[in-house]
Image (tube, rainbow, N blue to C red; front, side, top):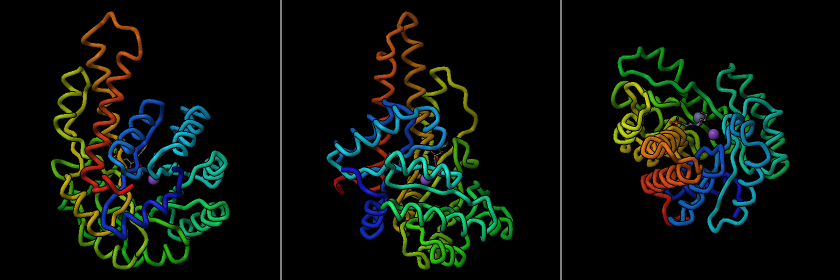
Length: 305
Ligand SMILES: O=C(COP(=O)(O)O)N(O)CCCCO
Ligand code: NA
Ligand SMILES: [Zn+2]
């Protein structure tokens, strides 16, 4: 069933498990994510970025909303990294049930003002809001303290920000970053900072840039002809610890992309004569579904629907 992001995340934070927000740009990702959720009886958040909405248009948004309504588990349709009030309005018009307004690159007062404006519009139509405070950036442990403070979420500021904006959940910067290169080896995650934020912010917390970038997937991608450098993601233990501290929404996009692309490269390499798209998109879809299922196991959302 189609529910708001807060309905899913409030329960998750209260009961100490995480829920995956998985990005989709097409039919295969959407099917993989929803099938995994139904098979594991897990709530799930289908995340569409502005780029996904541009790429898939009505075909994607209509499919996502319709399948979410028919799903036998709770599903929220979420605008990932909404960059403007107008972009959020478009998502609201498409029937999204969760929207992110990301003004984390602006100064504090601008972020508060813009976020508050989106909260008023979204709440008026029963949709819940994710905001962001702090800058996503992989930080080496030796990074100077004041530089960390400039980048990472300030716990006291977070409390004030949530009180002034009325946002429903908060994306925090504690050392993660988007993409396949999150730092050399095991990225440093500032758990004490997260614990402090969670003490001051009762709302569900959100972790962006949370993909694991597992070495076996990186190697499989390379073996199939992909080119990727010294890739590294967030260690599963750091994800579990973050969930125990108050993270309820965990964003995964890179791991799905790597799996999908590796399988397509393998299928095309194996049979150069093949030109039925279902023969390479189908196995790629299955690979995405397996990654989603393993993430749900890690987050503890299996059986929580
Ligand atoms: O936080 C994330 C995903 O993080 P990751 O790259 O670790 O999968 N997202 O918000 C997805 C970003 C979509 C645009 O690229
Ligand atoms: Na988001
Ligand atoms: Zn993100």
